[in-house]
Length: 250
Image 1 (cartoon, rainbow, N blue to C red):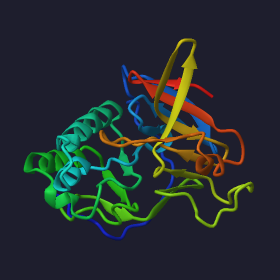
Image 2 (image 1 turned 135 degrees about the vertical axis):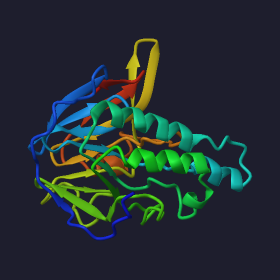
Image 3 (image 1 turned 180 degrees about the vertical axis):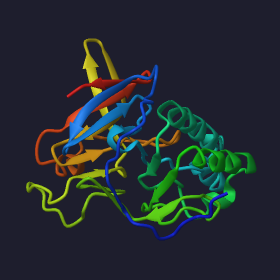
Image 4 (image 1 turned 90 degrees about the horizontal axis):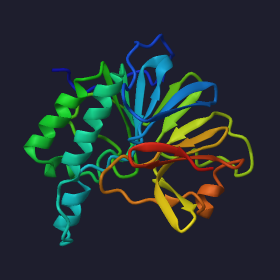
């Protein structure tokens, strides 16, 4: 079994990908900052040029953390989140998996995780040649039992992957480097006559892509919220997840 790696290069260059690719899954192909990216109906994003699968905000053990504070919620989110992630990884068969931060809900989440869920996570990490944990505000570092590389950001063909957008960026100006981030748990709403639908969404502008939260117990922030609107230099494209499908809604 590979030992956890703390220091490795945080730059990846696109290489030819295998022919595997999410057979039978609902997905949508887009271009972002020169990269071809496939938006999966689960909320993951796949970069065929380098065989990379990206997920964000798993928030593992959020349920057990809430239960420890006396909230009556079932502590089953890790089981569900890991099972869904395994299905995505097995479908796309990526060379590398990148978790964009807040993979664990807090610093003690690893200690609270049930033995079966720990084992499921360890076996999941072994499905890819490389597993990359990007630090988030909830989890600056993944627990030691998790295999993989620990970094605060990753560069892939001129695009930076990190948990939160660059805090020094001035609203209304173009980013020096395009970013793929998580953190905000973006959600969209679609009004369709007498009915309306809402769900997590990918929020994509010319130089910023915000991934939806992948975790089972994660809430969401409307893409119409001022904090999200201020991050985008132009009107973003919104791809909502509903019924395990990806819907372009704006």
